[in-house]
Image (tube, rainbow, N blue to C red):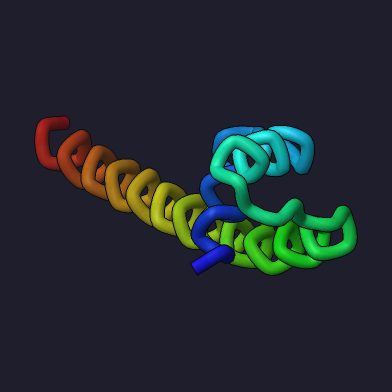
Length: 77
């Protein structure tokens, strides 16, 4: 469950201080910098995997459009 919290924090660009302030407002125990860094590394792997897949999908789509345009141009000419 906390991994989702860290994922959201990383996605929004929020850091350890903001998380601890939020926890303080909710009367929850703070998170140590070691734990925060560990979760940041875990979620960073997920972000990298999603970014790689998204980039790969975009490249394939661009290639497909290029090939279709070439075929279309040859038919018309």
